[in-house]
Image 1 (cartoon, helix red, strand yellow):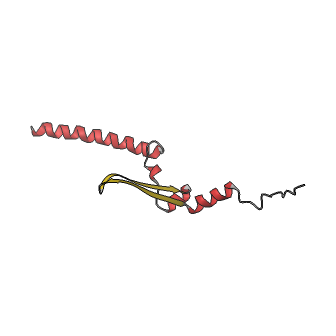
Image 2: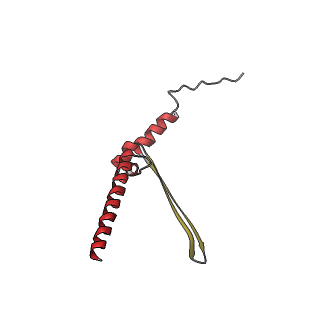
Image 3: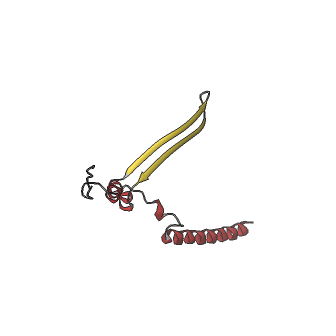
Length: 101
């Protein structure tokens, strides 16, 4: 009869621990794809992937989601304010152009 050893959770690193480490430190995966024909570049793709927690990304100065109006209500409000300001400036420009003519 074969003897089977039981593996305890303390002996194995679980997925949650690995994920926590990756998000805490961050990981970058980079790659390039280049297709050439007779020394002429037909296609050049640069792929960069960063996996990190929001806190780590903020420490690195990455916060693009703050400016994305689909992800941030503050960005949506700024976008709306900018649109109103643009309309106001266009009307003012039209009035000034009408006076000059």
